[in-house]
Length: 113
Length: 114
Image (cartoon, rainbow over all chains, first blue to last red; front, top):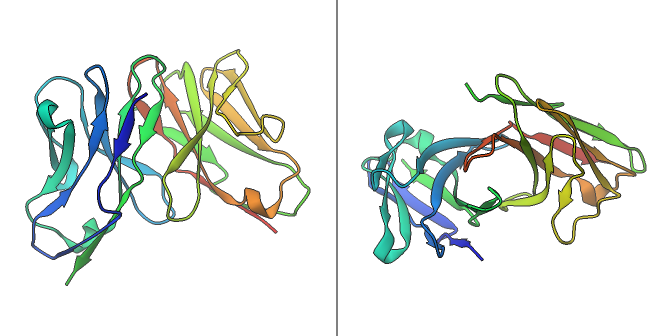
């Protein structure tokens, strides 16, 4: 069965610093991977997705993620954090048979002034 | 494109009553709709998957008689929480799929049972 692991339930960075949110997956076949952001009391907003094309994926709001098959990772990065980036971030993998999503447990990003 | 709406966005109901949440795909036809539940500060938990015109498939541990799901058309699915109790209070999120790997998420419905 597929699974997603997000290391670090809470991450704090200073404004202007690099953001790195970790996501590792387990899948026996090439997966479809997603990063979503959720602000308080709101739904999910898609940041970016990997669909077996380019391994470096650029998303909205300056975020990007790199698919590394050898490390089974899909870490999310942003060169310079902004206060508005403070939110909950979820990594998800889509099951290729059922199209169900398996979500990670989420990482709450805090940006310090 | 690929917009999903939910109604209501927030609902308060009394214990023992039922409440219906609607999920609509506004600009596309959704062959599959998914219903999730999210407790505070937790991840999304898939409750059930529904295909248009078919009975919903519930995840293990989800009471199908309590959480009634109807997917009557390619643009509308409903979740009815029957005989709601305070422990049913949660954030309910739907998503819609078109038979591919990607789901499109609604904005969520906050249910509070008093």
